[in-house]
Length: 147
Ligand SMILES: Nc1ncnc2c1ncn2[C@@H]1O[C@H](COP(=O)(O)OP(=O)(O)OP(=O)(O)O)[C@@H](O)[C@H]1O
Ligand SMILES: [Mg+2]
Image (tube, rainbow, N blue to C red; front, side):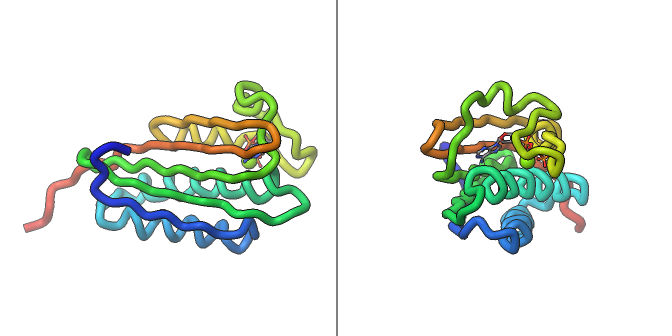
């Protein structure tokens, strides 16, 4: 993000315990932006979906690094980038379709749809065999300060 006001990066292994860690990190990063309960919950849910995908798809049967970088900007917006160096996605357009999954009966294929609907924008870039980068943005409402 250009002209960011704040930036935090964390790298963690793709273990399920770190899904909660990533949610809490995002919540802590958002605190100075004074999000509403709904905005906070939307961002945490989107982060959960993206990190879960790294754990269950990108590094299926193995463990690898997940890098989460968060920026905040001048208009009280956040940009969150979640990057893995896992298996990659063959066809991103298809993967983003609601209910499309390679996860079998365990998964519903709704992760990208949830990220898209809870955030203002979603971009997914992936190279098969190299990894995937998910970028999401959301504007956090600016509320009047109590006197
Ligand atoms: N980081 C990733 N690395 C590799 N493949 C991915 C990654 N994220 C998503 N995918 C692929 O995209 C498909 C769709 O992802 P999406 O999150 O929408 O659904 P899902 O994970 O299958 O199910 P749900 O999220 O509802 O549990 C996945 O089934 C998987 O094939
Ligand atoms: Mg998913």
